[in-house]
Image (cartoon, rainbow, N blue to C red; front, side, top):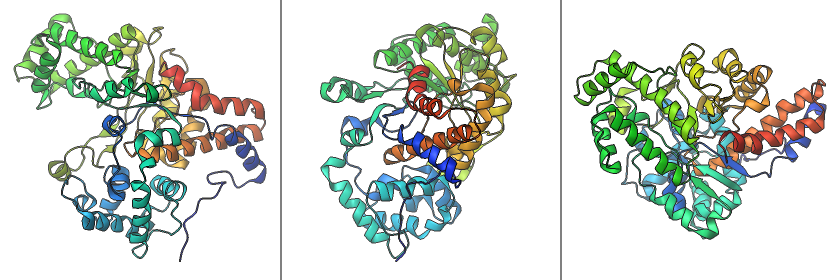
Length: 471
């Protein structure tokens, strides 16, 4: 029977000399703590120390990176548990069997890499997934899940997760974060921080925008019928999040353009939006005004601002209508950065209290625009990319593209952007291995000394994210 295994030198160069350097660099970072400043793990998992229940709920249903590959190869998302609360054990086994039957469809993908890392390194699986081995692998993982020592809080220790940020609606009461902060034993060694995600409140052409503005008024007690009141309410919620440990805000809008409108025009457009009669081009202008004001707020409250345009959300209408958002059909598109951010950066780009982290799915834009901007503006940092750029080859291209213009000091540190909890150590380990590969190449051609490369590797893992996210 075919075996599943992980080689100690995975991802390292084939050249003996460079591989030896990479090994030595990686050895200095492999056991450093994980700092995860941008992700989507539900805080209730950790606050209530919930069981992962079964292998399908753990590995498959919440991971839309995996679901999209299975969907492309004929599986229905409902078969994988997406949008379903009625899955029994037989359903969960069938879903997991689909993953195993399609194992070869993941060959060469980033998903294959981190799935293997979890199966072998975490669950002790030694059989290669297939239709024949699916039930045995399922049973092995189920036994692991049923062990009380494999609940989220214990895994925070096992994975060495020192800091993890969740993504939260501005009107969330942050009860789960309060619960975690009140647990002195847990919070002494781990920090789980909320992240302020106001996108849906900054898009006046959304069908539910007025409903959200009304909700904001209910939560804050501030009248949001005027732009001044709406602004004050958002400021109030940012302050609430900061009081509950938030270090950043997160923005995934359609583009990076931001700019203030004339005060009278901004109020006029806001009134049209509240009346439900704003035109699309007017909504875009108001959104850009509101985004500019979020930057202004960041200079005042000090929350790091992450900006990541470049994903066309819910590309397949039928999938969205059946299953809702975030199920794997967000598709990248090309973006423009230099002109779009000019007004924003001319106003705030060198402000001493502002950290702007820009990342996107458009690989080409990093060397052409983002790295040069980060190489000049004091507030701009290069976000380590995610999703389609999680592949090892893409990550190396990214590292080579940004370093020559921005240098290592302008990099945010790893952003794993995942809700698949057990993939977090696999993703961070992959990044550390590829940091070692990149740095080893610079040592091999005598652009860095090895001691400098080792020091730099540690900074990328710990120092950079602590600086950028003000930890």
